Image (tube, rainbow, N blue to C red; front, side, top):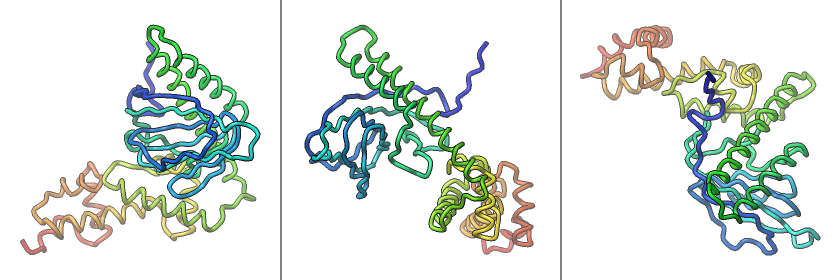
Length: 292
């Protein structure tokens, strides 16, 4: 019996396939727009640009662009290129990838909206794009399910490519000669603290934070300590204790169990020990001193 392993999604990967098409763009797209679904754009030939959320990105054969819901974009072909700017569009919804909001495709390493596929990955994904184009022309039985099957293959290949990107980056992080620029260090710290502030109510770990950042937990811990003087876990505990104190200040009638759960702790006793260590008094004693 095969054990089901959802290693890229929380549940079964069963996207709703919306549409696909391949087009040769000769003129700049007039409509600067966004969608409420995910759209992948794979550049099959030629050169051009994509205007995405106010920033212009060069695009050419082998580039793949991630357009999550709410991402404004438009395509701009290079008029001087001798090869037509050929794009493959894939639209889908109803997915929930690990460490991502619902209906959001995880970004490439470094929070990139656009990346270049290596030749080996490009060959496989281009083949699937062409298979989708051919199937789209047919009226055969099960056409929708064949199209969805091709889409799932592309999503799984991209997940593997992202994993390889992360692993390659981690190898560089372990090389003492490799060093992030100070701007990037600051950005990484901002993203770590932002993630904690948005998820402190959940049961999160350093490994989860690292996976969300597409970095190694070792690198994150070392960088956070060098830039802030504290560890990521201590920062998370501090944040949770502050939020717990705010909850008690707002409503002294709240039970310790409910306050603990609200800041990410299932064990009220463990929470109370942390609170006392942080503030010098237990949460029960603290709330007894508040005006009722």
